[in-house]
Image 1: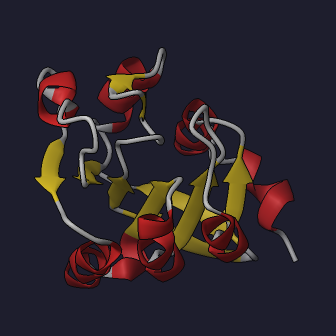
Image 2 (image 1 turned 60 degrees about the horizontal axis):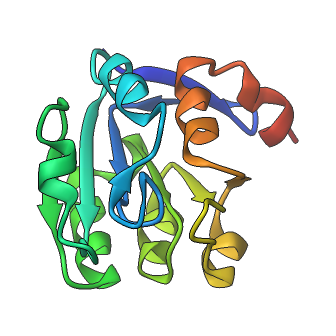
Amino acid sequence: MGVDLEIAGRTVAIETLLLDFTGTLSKDGRILPGVAARLKTISKRLKIVILTADTFGTAKKALSDLPVEVNLIATGIDKARFIRRAGPGSVMAVGNGRNDVSMVSLAALGIAVVGPEGAAGELVRSADIVVREINDALDLLLHPQRLKATLRD
């Protein structure tokens, strides 16, 4: 299990995918089109964990049919604690908000999503990659060769 990604000339074995929900996987609390199918496919190779403050109170219901673990958190500090326990060297983290900065910064691969609810500037500055929407980020796991040109030295 796992996904090997080539990052700046080295291979990183990703075992866990950490995702934010509000504004990253969803818009106005509703999961975005294409996300569910991708998460089902990715879950065959990676553990998927959703860390969310759940602004709209919809995350658990929206994700209930998917092979993911959902953890409600209060702050970005909670996300940082979680990734430290998970072992950041084998984690890909994806988010869009200010409370995702630590999580994305600590991860072996951190991705900022500039989705329909925008992205925090601080997060964009700290990410390894910035994508225009969540499906682009998830597709990097499904098509890892796409990372080579973006992250090569």
